[in-house]
Image (cartoon, rainbow, N blue to C red; front, top):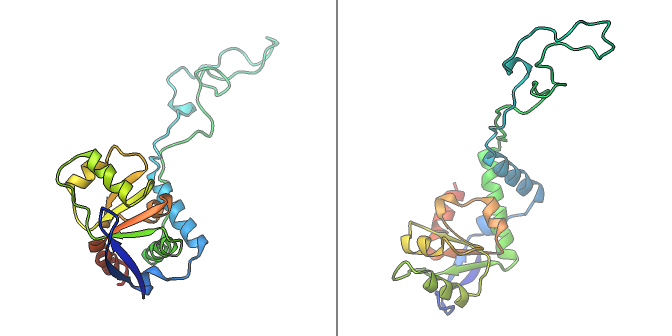
Length: 207
């Protein structure tokens, strides 16, 4: 079981925390991480792009001019895809881009992402992140004290002062435990866990 230092928002060591090997020390397979991240990003796509086919265009179905004798190319009706304002051939239509990934694989990928952060020394544990008021200046002072620039901060419960103080800071994202996902863990340089969130992660992944 790995042991990490727990620091406060001034950057001082206050205690130590144990991280279970079943969550923070699993074999990492890039193919599994890739599959889950790809599925996660695909699910975000709206899939609402739509074009009008030939049958959707308003217009007459009369043949524009006779087939032979004019010296011009053969023409059908005015809704032909070859003409301006005509229908579109093979264009997009509303669809779902969702890719199904089993719960077992998603849970395994989350463990792998957490393992990566720990092994690459990009995991910090804070005892708490309590701000007296909603003030970005106070939040930035704390972030500079713990020496992070691009980080994902995971809280166990709602923390209104922290969430509102950080929302305009680029490169920093505050997320509640129930929203923890593989993409955001890998996207940010540092993963900052509040000590209370560790138990929540264990309960979520050790089922």
